[in-house]
Length: 228
Image (tube, rainbow, N blue to C red; front, top):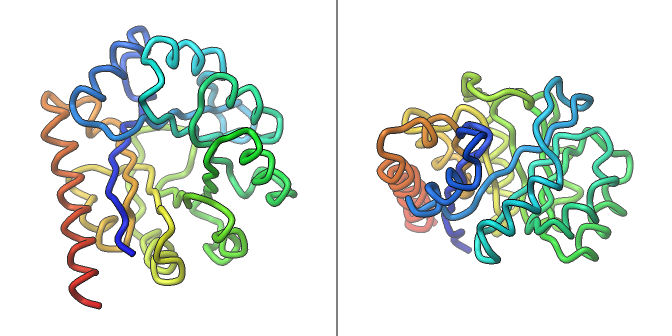
């Protein structure tokens, strides 16, 4: 089953004093969804924003945009309901942050959100596999979570490739150092949800970058279909 290719700018790389306007700018430039990084200063050594900001963005942007919440927090169970109420569409938690993925997945679904499950570079993809049929999306981090602007880790691509082979219909997201120079590796490995931060947000022509990322992804999907 061929997956649709979606590009989600990471708004953490935007001008945070103009967050609502920056989100609108990305959507106007063709972004398929918005990737919102939530960091608590415990799971990762950085602090960003929480559900009050998500709620404000939802009011500002309306019901239509898809909010993918990347929860880099040490207690993901704590924030499910607040994020659902704030307007999150997908709640992506880290496997490393919980001892009870099953109940957490159930709770996210009961709060009417899609389920994303993320793994850090040091976590094997086999650790994620038991949950793959219960989630909507797997996020393979291609940098260490916590800070933007890091160098893309190409040695994470076998994880993406393995997931695509084992779970052909699963949405697979990559996040960290993804841009025009690295998108082909991600797309060829099987990623179909592409998070891009500075490559899109800092570009003079975000629309062209988004189109380039999407086209690379679409071409890779088409090639995989032909090779079958």
